[in-house]
Length: 318
Image 1 (cartoon, helix red, strand yellow):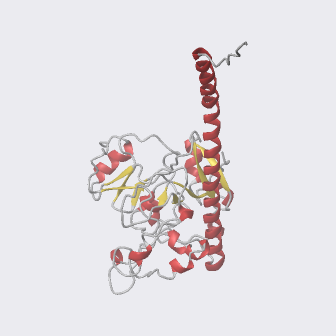
Image 2 (image 1 turned 30 degrees about the horizontal axis):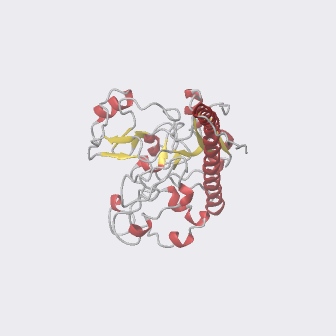
Image 3 (image 1 turned 180 degrees about the horizontal axis):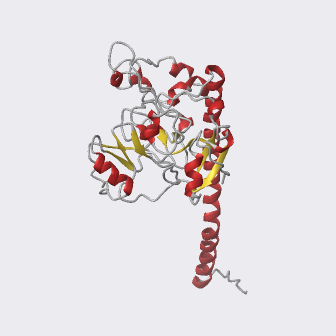
């Protein structure tokens, strides 16, 4: 009686099969990752589109754009204890956040007690870019944001309403669509920032140190962050710190972080770049509400002039 022997795989054959599978996985993985990032970028684009639509709806109701932040005296206390609420607070009713907006006390700053201390910690899904998946919060008391408003060349233009270098937003700003003389399709309105990156040094009255920072010659900020430093996207609500809610176009998107060149002097002047975790660029919303993806390699002069609303430059969108 003959016996039938069942032949199995040899060790060499198994190793070959495993190697082939490994090669296939290595070839497919980048495609899968790229597809996932494309989905995340689409979500981010939709977030910016909805925020732009909310800004336009605000404009329709009040005949002006929302101010970037308000710093005026209100109520029985001084200006540095009142208001300071960001542009996001103004558009809450237009992003389906009426219940949250009803709690806002416009006469008190977020850290001065009252209901604003409840509002300030509310996470809003619309303000998160899924590519920036860090759970880091620069301050445990404040909910963060990935989306910031354009103030032009530098934040000192806040205090010069007629400056050719100003953007659509600013402190106490009230620009109208008709005031965007450079054309709404050629003027930046919103973009992205990375939460908690980079740390921003606050120089206070140290104008010499601030000028060193602008020149890229100031000392680096290390992981041992000094008390006078804060981070990007710190709060969607609190407008006192400009790096929380604004960006300017002095540096191109995702500009290399050299010797701490993102900084501010007091809370009126500073430079903060648009940044994202997307590969090679950032999403932006223009003043006409359209959204685009701008590459890191965009010409610096073009990017600079896209930030102004009345710079009188002829700029072709990249």
